[in-house]
Structures are given as structure tokens and as C-alpha cells.
Length: 185
Figure 1: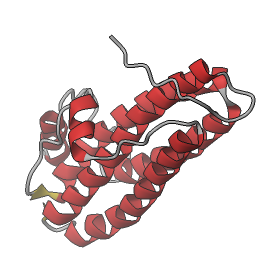
Figure 2: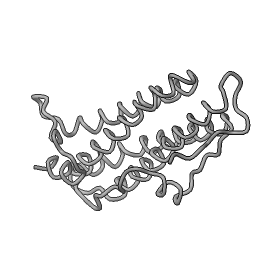
Figure 3: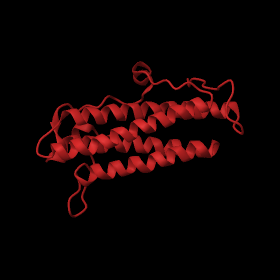
Figure 4: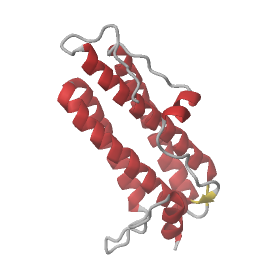
């Protein structure tokens, strides 16, 4: 049973029930962004190997931008009359995905796993954009901007995983472990 996030008030021009739908949708986006921020920082701390510095330095600006995205989503939730729940307990209780599974590993292995992480976040965000677009263009616009940035970050990751012939090392991988293994093979 879905929780009811209908606020007592919301922004002009949006019905309270529709705002509640947006708040529920944005809560999931907030959890995804907070989780992605922590995952990227985990990679930053646990990457090793010959590509260490390139990945270490590539990930930090992504961390910063993802944190900004989370802040923007939390502020949109508040503007809609909702409560932005950003605590670890709520994130873990409400997320629909498993924790990042790669520990200390080669830079390319982490990038292989991150490719799958980004794919999942982007797919879910695309679905959220469609729902938001039916309710509120301001929320849709916010999410579209984030989608562009996340797709660019995945492109940065995939540049390390693509052959000169255009083959992606992680093609067909279904888990982070498979993606990490295929990236270094």
C-alpha cells in the first residue's frame, strides 16, 4: 500500500492530491540521489590501480553535483508542502534497490559497476520525468536538468569501458559484480 503524502497546502495551480503524488515521487528521487552521492564517495575512497587518480578526481565533481541535485529535490518537496526525509534510516527503509556491492577494487571494476548504478538511476528518473510532466512543468524541468547531468556522468564512466570499435565492456551485465568483472576482463 502506497503511503499518502498529500500535503495540507501546496503551490498555487496544483491540486493537493497531485502534489502528494509528486512528493512521493520526489522522495524516491531524493533517496536515489543521496544513495548515489554516498556510492560515488565510496568509490572515491576505495578505488585502486593504475587508473586511480583519473577516477578519483573524476568522481568528486559528480559527488558535488549529485549532492546539489538532492538539495534541489528536497527543497522542491518542501515547496510542494511535503517533508523531505533525508535520514539514512528512511532511505534504507524506502529504497527499492540493494546497497552498492563493490569494495576496494580496481578503478575499471568500479567504473563497470557504476555504469549499472547510473543506468538504474537514469531509468528510474526517466519514468519520474514522465509522471511529473503530467502534473507539474516546474518539477518536470528540475528532473530533466538532473537527467542531462546524470547521463553526462554515465558517458564519462562509459568512456573508460568502451572499445575503439564502440563495444561496451559491461554490455549484458546484470549485476554490479558481473559488470565489474567484465570491465576488467
